[in-house]
Length: 388
Image (cartoon, helix red, strand yellow):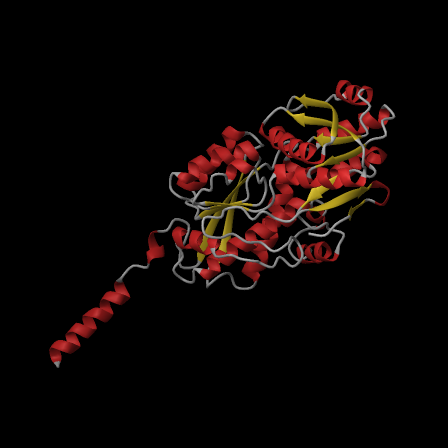
């Protein structure tokens, strides 16, 4: 009897003193989970980066106000890369080696994120990216990287298909950037042009950072184009639209979701009336977006509220997915458990901020349903034309 008692006590003692598997997991303590973000908080792209950051601030404040996740509060350390890829890598290395973060949420631009992914892959550090869903980030799929959104190629494909249906017999022009971003846009356009037999009268490329589009818009006018893929990001969208307006070019134009930022509408003025954008994120004017803004008012200043845009919404959804995987790991949180639980997310309800979100075994891209949105400059609104 005494021998059995001693064995039982020894077993109990071993259980009490055995380390939890999370004990050696970077960024995880008894009461805190530390995440890292690398976003552009300075320079022209900061209007995206700051909005993105504010989305994560809202999500973190909300979850911590409710007591955290499984007894742990969420902490986020953010680094500014100024939209420079080399700085993105430096910031990621600092977050890993100095700040000891558990995982990365949010990211910078396409090339910046790809560079950071190489660093994270060395130690299988998770990344949930709801910012720049470029194809190269999930094709082929990487074990530790999860991308929320829709590809530029598929976004353009759906937009051009919609526009071509609305304006039959149009003569098409494309003006796109001479880099990976532009290549994805051209790939999407070319697929629909072949599928629907579109008449393409001119296809032009511009240099990254270009300011003056007078020559390009003049060529578009001389080619007799009546519809155009405006392949700009932010300032380029504005410059093309204003130059076309100046030339008296009556053209049906469409662009990607970066054209759906309030700053674009403010800068382009009447030249942007009727601009079509494609997106997978709700507008801030519809019920889901209004509810998001009301939630934000609990945690942000009035000045910060003014800086919210569609990137705040996508960031918030990305954080919700991150929290869901953490929550489903229970007390024993490890990176491998997190990755496994991310894979299990299916038809996650975003409350109307996006369509349902799903990953899967070996699936690292959510392939969100897109919708068409029109810029109503006169009323300072973005009007949904289709549903998710």
